[in-house]
Length: 314
Image (cartoon, rainbow, N blue to C red; front, side, top):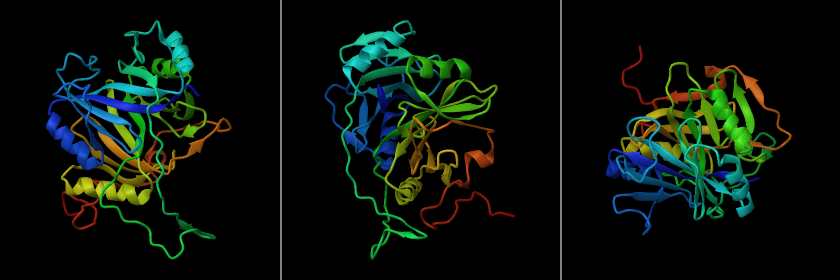
């Protein structure tokens, strides 16, 4: 278990102040870091995972793999120094390889800059209200919570559009040791960094004619009620919903996607499948049914608590 998961996203954006307001309303906490340049801003989750904003023309950023505001670097947490040494040997011939004081960097075949460093994640202990199901009542004399906003626990995964799916998948599997969780035939692959982990840390998506780029990034929250609380808070703030709330049958996760000024979308999610070495990857045809068991298009309006609609339905 060399790579533990994603611990930081670094963005180059057109409007740092607007993006900072988005992250704060998404539920991330502003972070003071004297090591950052004065024109950068940093935010963190409860576990200490970070999102850092830089002006998109900052020469200190790695090159962008698409135009406009977008993700410029992904930092993966590594379990030990021995693991860092193994990774250095595996990627030393990759483009952009650099040994750093506390880790190493390289670029993947999709053009995304990756950093690997020892994990800085904090342990998080939270009370999560149990659910009541038929024959298994665990919440007694206690109502389910209602959240006014979300407080994301950590970074869960990233999703990228890729032009050469086979090459990018081979890099993550053969060089970094990732495991296939499930696959959309000729369309995409869900990968997890460790054999025993949540359903995916990375989803690589190939759409014919679609150039490489960022689709979305995702953050874990404690339960489905916090998915709703986070999504409704973003609706109150005027940030448009891309899709959600809803549920993915391929990972069992409940979700809510919000369009982001940072590029791509930001997702709240919870209840994803937990996998082990015993899991056998499935090969599924990509379809509406395999992507969403159910979903609300346009989200829920925080005032009416009903589906947001631009037009009255016929």
